[in-house]
Image (tube, rainbow over all chains, first blue to last red; front, side, top):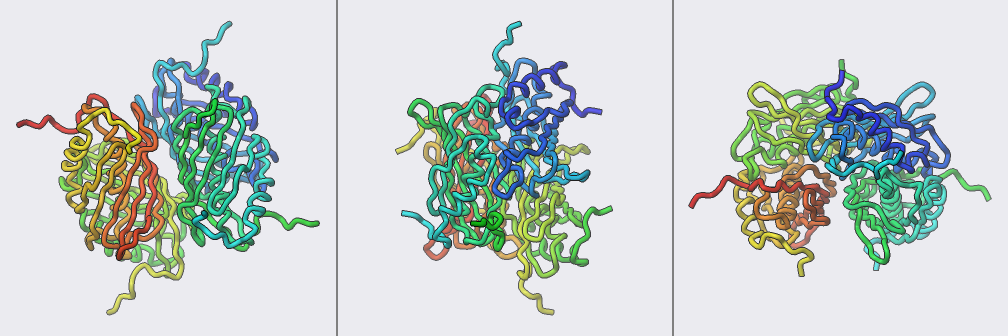
Length: 154
Length: 154
Length: 154
Length: 154
């Protein structure tokens, strides 16, 4: 059962709408896998055009997934008319990002009126096994009264 | 004049070869602007398909540029038969990444036989002005005796 | 049951000896509470002379406890003739450090021949309740063939 | 000449008063060396009771100095009726903290209404030479309408 009660009952739609506006997530082929109060999961199927010099997924892509999952985990616990921004994060890249798929799993450690702290891990799925390849610790800020996007018409 | 003397006189070619193998840098349209001992600069023209939900360049892209610049700044000071990996970094995202172009400028603070510490800033160029939008502090590891790529034939 | 098998069967004595040589831990009154493979706990009774300007325990003290617990958690998994150093860490200070006692609990996420990654949380105990006040993510390096202290005579 | 104009003309007194209330700084013997708009310097003469297991100054002490300097650098640019808290920081410990004296020098990278980003370096002075032993990147929050201390009578 969830540890947190989201102030916005439509938190999942709010997150999915916002994710859908991230053109970069579309460019890399990332998928918003799961959204629940204080948690978010973003997945990415391996692609050859997302690699660094050794043929593994680029650390920047791993980081982008983790950052996105962290932001939306925090956003699930923010009010309706607000938006979320990452102010900073730190990531440890612990193993090469190889495998069929990466999954970033974020969990809110401390929600806050202004700042939230989120912990995220990224796993690589490879032939049925899952390896933790990265650990992130992030600070997110809630911008109150700043809707996440321009009003949608129609 | 440079503060550091690279052990590999071909440091720039080594860095440029390695950068050219990063498929992700090609995917986002990043350019290896400058390479000098202990320093590296990576630039990225704005593109609509690299954005987050508010229409700015995604924090993951900003981070990928900074991470790449940091890695190659450290790599300029590593021996010929070695490769470089980021073990961790922390980034503060201080202002929205908007403008015609982003530039990540990395500088080695402390080179080391095993670990190097690099400081990187990312600037957004917008109608002739430059704003510092992010600051990163990274640790890079030198893998000795591990060439950066498979032997090139021909 | 422990997730890790320490290469040095005397890991606990090694850690306790090393902690006993930390004059700063004595100065602040910190106690090495628990040591097990890949884990370490350091506690600190509240003292008025360890505070910041608002009368809470200083962030530097909270950090010192977490850093020490992280180092020794990693050290439990290092070989006998080695020593451990923190190369870097990041900490989020999430709530004021008030209460009768602080406890830092560190757990190895990824042990490594050279680098280990450790996650630490600090809790404040206050009238029977425990609040998580800080979260740290650290990188520790193993110095092989570098004993932790001068040879003890007698 | 200073890059920043402090909103509180009494910024130096405000900082010195606050520093004087930090019992932990007194306990370790730290000195508030310099305060100017957006900058702060905290120094610490070497003491045997502040060491880690190898006889160098404990990383937690180095961090406490840097954290304190960072907080007060940010505080110089905050309004009179406010207080400052570190929300998070990351530090790279690059060389052993040995020498007669440590000096932490902090500089605001980005002041903000709510969050400020500060960069700090710690130097060890040893027989007339100065070595950069640590680099920190911090986020500080301004608590508006929250005075730093109880009202002083008299």
